[in-house]
Image (tube, rainbow, N blue to C red):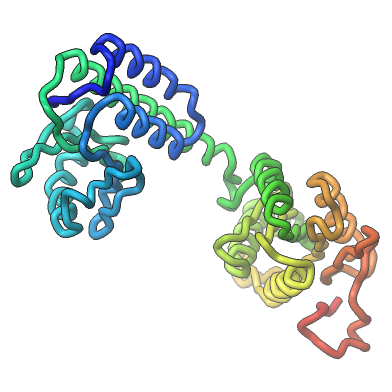
Length: 351
């Protein structure tokens, strides 16, 4: 590509670009990686426009652009969609090499490079031609693009590995390791926005007899089905974890204690109503004891929040199992009325 350097000698431009490109390895988020790369484009080269787009059909809106140099100033949405339609098979081809390629569109030359490989849905780094510049500027931008491609591929592989590390093999839910990360994030967000969230600690009742009577394969199937029940009961934004054994944890994002209790009751009722096929002509039933605690109402530290919800779950066990127990503001357990005195069946569960 023909690129014009910003003020400074070509040697200075190359040195700045080289230093900036090497610094990309220190980025820890893909979004930050793309943003820093585009800043390097903008600060070192007189490029009319540069953008990053996702090559998904019918949605070619730029994910990131250099401020004041949007690609939309040069191409209509329809023309941008046409460009992406042309480039999509090229980007998805295993024969497409890394580096920079070019395409003539009307009276403009468009340069592009792929982020990601053909196994993924790749992103497209796209920029317009500029005036003729010294060869070192072209070398610098080629180095910058290749560094971005290498770093992006590395990030993608790390993200895939982290996802596998944070998932429970049996149920597909998040695992105990990810709970600590999620709690740290949610407690910080709650403090920043003065919001709350709830933690439900769920332990299955009468699960051990299923394992003892029908075997661990049957028990594993019950756990998978319970996980699906919990996941289907909460919102997409909420997080569900297998804490270990037959214990589960749910984080209800931006939810107060009343919402947490209602959700816990729905989960408890659906598990109680379920019939689990564990063998031919054999049906097993399990119930659940659920502890509910809200942050920061019942605890202002993540470790304490887990401990309070866990204690509420054990209080449910002590009171006869198959019910939900909500923490009090004094971090003591409060349960609902006796079923014989119950007026609102949606508020507390039967024992």
